[in-house]
Image (cartoon, rainbow, N blue to C red; front, side):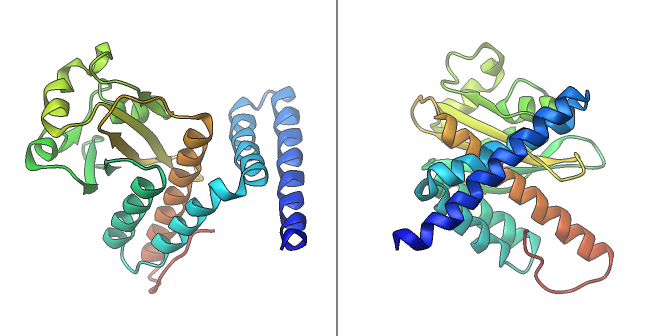
Length: 228
């Protein structure tokens, strides 16, 4: 068993090293945005090589969700996977409303009508999801009661019962913001670096699958489109 695992992990580590080298080269050429993107992939590959047992449940969750035939079922299953592997208590996936430019909830787990009404359309940058969408960067609030920008949403957070939230933008390969994946926790907490890296990777896979599904629908293809 050990011998069968050694080669794939060694290959993954070498891929991470090669990606890091490419990122450094791109940065020297002044292509900062692409360098950052490649560096992120290097981080994901390095984590997969160093801690395969930590990464494996995320791969399984992505594979499970990708087998769903329609987008609604895919988003529901992807959210279930995120909540499970990140050990969260609540969660939702919001997609960008192309008409209004705001975020709308497309999948949710654990929330009541008051929460859903409050966050039916998000256009501000005070909430975690709004900040993640605005900055196109992961936003973590360890304790919503201590975060000044979250003040307008504290009442609904208290009523719902969550104290911490992690929001990760869902961005496709072309750089387009598709939505935000958010997971919520009942108690204040600080996420580990590995957890945040994996949440980013997971959101990336959701974005890749959504993009592929939309392209397939535009081209008139039927059937399940799986993430790469």
